[in-house]
Image (cartoon, rainbow, N blue to C red; front, side, top):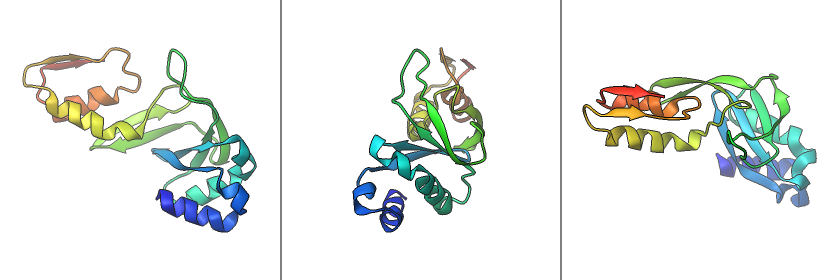
Length: 152
C-alpha cells in the first residue's frame, strides 16, 4: 500500500512536493493517521483524499504533528479530511478495541507482538498488564492463551 500511496501522490503533486511525503501511515479502525513533514503540510488535503481513495474503509484522516511523547505516550493530531472524530473501533485477531487515538496510544503495528506474547503465556499463569491503555495486549492474551487471569 505504501508504494501505491507514493505512486498515486507522485501523479498529483509536483516532484519537489512528492519527495517530502512520508509513505508510512497507520490505520486504526476507520481512521488513518499520516505523518506530514513540514514541507508537505500544504499537501495534507490531497494526501488525505488519496489515502481515503486507496482505503475505502477509512472515514477520517488525521495528521500526526509531533512524535509520540509524554507520560501517556500521546501524539498531537490535526484533522485533515473526512468525518471529524478521533474515536473508532479497531478489529484485530478476532478482537475489537474501542480506541480514541487522541487520548490513548495505540499502534496497529504491534499486532504481531500482541499475538506473540499471547502464545508465550502458559496455562495457569496470572497476567498483570499495568498501564494497559486500550488493553489490547490483555484482550488478545485473554482470548488466545490459557492463562488463569488477566488484570489490566
